[in-house]
Amino acid sequence: PFDVLVVGGGPAGAAAAIYAARKGVRTGVAAERFGGQVLDTMEIANFISVPHTEGPKLATALETHVRDYEVDIMNLQTATKLVPGGDLIGVELANGATLRSRSVILSTGARWRRMGVPGEDQYMAKGVAFCPHCDGPLFKGKRVAVIGGGNSGVEAAIDLAGIVSHVTLLEFDSKLRADDVLQRKLRSLPNVRIILSARTTEVTGDGTRVNGLKYEDRTSSEIHHVALEGIFVQIGLLPNTEWLKGTVELSPRGEVLVNDRGETSIPGVFAAGDCTTVPYKQIVIAMGEGAKSSLAAFDHLIRTSAP
Ligand code: FAD
Image 1: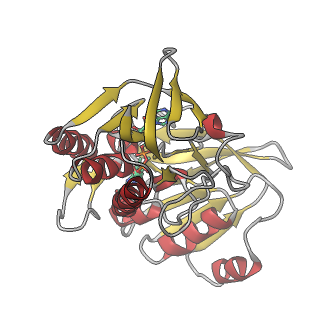
Image 2: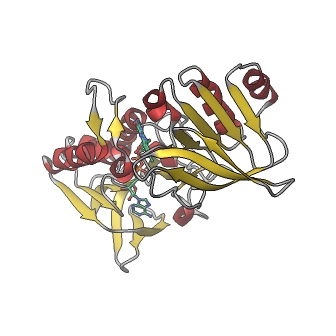
Image 3: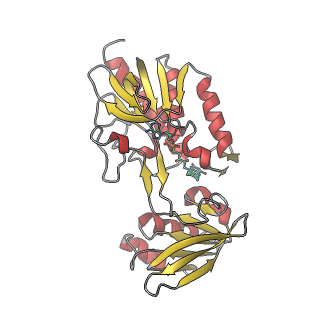
């Protein structure tokens, strides 16, 4: 059995594994796809002390760093069930095996909900973006759309309005769902246009980059085209925690509930990164949380019976 078993190999999981291995305890990482969301990222300009890097490069660096230590990396392994137990906690894998460990760190991350329209995949990272904190500055002085009028969409539109030349916010419903205070702020901005009852139907481009989007006005069924350079999709960030339902306590949005030490509702089970209730989903934050939960897991190990 392991002393620390990390489930998930993104920035949070990599940090957790390194911190555990440096304590000299038996450490394993099981990950569906080592690297996580970072693999889907191009420009990274907010990884502090590295002014510019790219996703695949950072993902390789994460794995190289973890491999510097004695860590059992089990890549391409999907966890399907957490089985809490007395001394040993079980993690069942899709291949039928069960891993056992004295402590488990959940770091299965999250995924952005996509619109599912033509052009979206083709222009991913070529104008289609998800994270305003990450990619907003790339659109300085340009025109962008934000899809979604909930809190995250309206926050993104307000944030972007200070950077880009113009923001068009499209909401499917006939009204915005964001908090009133955010809506008031949004409506006070001179370079924002709000379009309600709008169903995005297509991302258009010139073959290389986004040049606009098409939407259907749901009241008239007319199709309109908006010319712009960027599209931020803000229709939900889904935590990869479906496999945990019925075990650790989750928030109404499906995020693993953690305290300030990364402890979950089950003793010996910790969680870190985008799959948790910790706000602001970012690489440096996920890494910090991974390190913290790993130190908390070590604290747990030295307080429970020796191996
Ligand atoms: P993830 O990176 O999501 O990793 C989760 C890991 O868990 C993966 O290895 C995955 O395969 C694995 N996993 C999932 N389910 C299972 C399962 N059931 N069993 C086993 N393994 C599982 N942040 C920044 O700070 N700067 C940026 O510029 C930036 N740009 C971004 C651009 C894009 C397009 C995207 C999508 C995100 C971007 N982010 C950026 C956000 C950043 O990537 C995340 O905050 C960060 O990767 C979260 O790390 P994590 O380890 O919590 O989760």
